[in-house]
Amino acid sequence: MVRTGPVPRSPRDAAYPSLAAVERAVVDCVRCPRLVAHCRSVARGKKREFRDQEYWGRPVPGFGHNRARLLVVGLAPAAHGGNRTGRMFTGDSSGDWLYEALHRFGFASRPASVARDDGQRLLDCYISAAARCAPPGNRPTREELASCRPYLEAEIRLLRRVRVVVALGRVAYEGWLKAAGWWSALPARDRPPFRHGVEARLPDGTILLCSFHPSRRNTNTGTLTRPMWHAVFRRARAILESGRAAPRDRLRRGSRDPAASRRTGRRSPPTPRRPPPGPGGRRRAAGAADSAEG
Ligand code: SF4
Image (cartoon, rainbow, N blue to C red):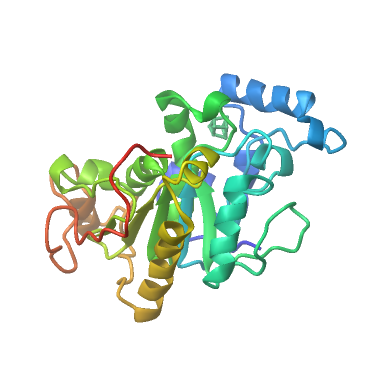
């Protein structure tokens, strides 16, 4: 279920006045010919174990509650996961990890997500991704990520209650920072770094939690363990329950309000509600060594 969004303030906002509008645009999107062709090809070829199923084979829209306070951002749908089922992180091993954790910490109604009609509901949570089409080799190009970014930008604008963002992997981390405007608003030295377990408070009070992606590569090798993974969502729950994350500035991105422009302008970083205690805000290691993203 989606709501009507805020009053459009720019032509781009007018194009996506609600989460339903974003969803419609995503599902019909053909901006990236390489990815569109790949999704369709995978859907035609299928995997042996799913040969009797009809694949979605299209861009996958965001999934979740329109008043969510937790936003989870992934990389892109998996070829035989989201690209098969049509729902984010649904029907693959990454999704098994994600929904188990979301359910454990009260953000999902069920511990597994297997199909769009399985009755799964997200509670106070919304799942999105840096790219909405399954990319070959799980590697969208920079151009494809840029083409897809307006959808995440629109979701960030429409999900006005979000207080905590969990970025799953470096691509998701960078994608969210760019879509939210912080990549250009903050000098590079003040951007939070990407490492598993990093916790950073952005100047508008949003808390960013970084995690390795729960890909098979990371979970099978022990790069990401269950305790490391659960620590991220336990922390998200604790932050939301403590109220530590401040309400976001209502006029932030896309606003014509001059003060907001000053907060988000490239030359003038956003004014912190409270000064962060160090570059990139407060950081907290949650138990993993720094390494490549998942
Ligand atoms: S990746 Fe995004 S922009 Fe590219 S075709 Fe898919 S939905 Fe459209």
